[in-house]
Image 1 (cartoon, rainbow over the protein chains, first blue to last red):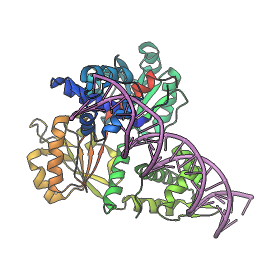
Image 2 (image 1 turned 180 degrees about the vertical axis):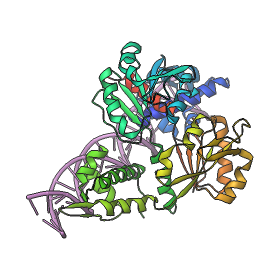
Image 3 (image 1 turned 90 degrees about the horizontal axis):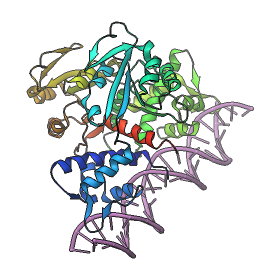
Length: 208
Length: 208
DNA sequence: AAGTGTGAATGCGTTCACAGCA
DNA sequence: TGCTGTGAACGCATTCACACTT
């Protein structure tokens, strides 16, 4: 299949959210225009995004809310449960471990790890924090597909290397540092300080 | 000045990080190539990014680490302190309030607010949680330029409207919902569940 | 009449390639 | 010689416009 832009995937994910809300409200069909206004985009964009994966609508009518939801879930790989581990049980890691939004979307936290003995043994929303030495063994056993990284910047790259070696193929990084992964592994980063700096730039250049 | 792409601003912010590391290691000059390899980009990209703002290098030699750092801080508006408020003192809000990375970059948390009386009064790293009713009064008094939103999805848009009305011009949203702001206000969103869904898509389409 | 699906046009960020300067 | 600065070429995502379907 043709390579899909990340921006497209991100929007598909948003569309799915709206479709679920729409479904809860009892609507049967929705047009590309309605979907677009929710997501801050255009109807042409919505139709183009969907067209990469097939024809889901009926001309003159729109899209079946339930059918399109199901298709998007299929496309995004959300029809299943993903097992997730979190490495780093500091403030951020703990918040992630207890974040309800993940579970709702099929992402189950199956392990939380830290090196600090003061944190090991604590329980976070039913999952208890284990020593990071148990990481490799647990990955081999539990086969988590996704790892969340919430450790200090300097510890992040060595950790990524360990995770990749153990077989993890997708990583979401919260450490404020760029990381590299071999081909075949997907890495995404969320850098909160960087987001603030972009706001800072916008504020000092407000006259545009 | 010509409008600058967000991707460019994001990279400038990364370059600044490396420059600071480089400076700490005692290096005096750096080439676009060295800067590029750190940030996972190309030397041409680095030079192009910088060229939007002026000429900072010496041909044949490279860039002065300290001079370029200073220029980037100036460009990004980091030469000053920004006052930040956080609305929502749940797990995410609390983690944000205690995040050291913000303070290091000049972002000072001057207020944390919540509607839940069980949370009001708690102290988070020196800042104590206040009732959300005090929001407007405090914004008028403290004049925070930036607000971080960490409230449930359904509470986010009304909150944004209040903040904008009170004079906040930059918002970083952690609620998993799209928001709209009037022109002149900058909004950025971090949606963690969405990031996981993009990873999910990558995993089920690994054969590319 | 209403709204999809899609080739074509557009706009924009990235990469190239090289002239210019230390 | 080494590396910057930048116009030009390129590639890709978005937008347009309209034929087509119900």
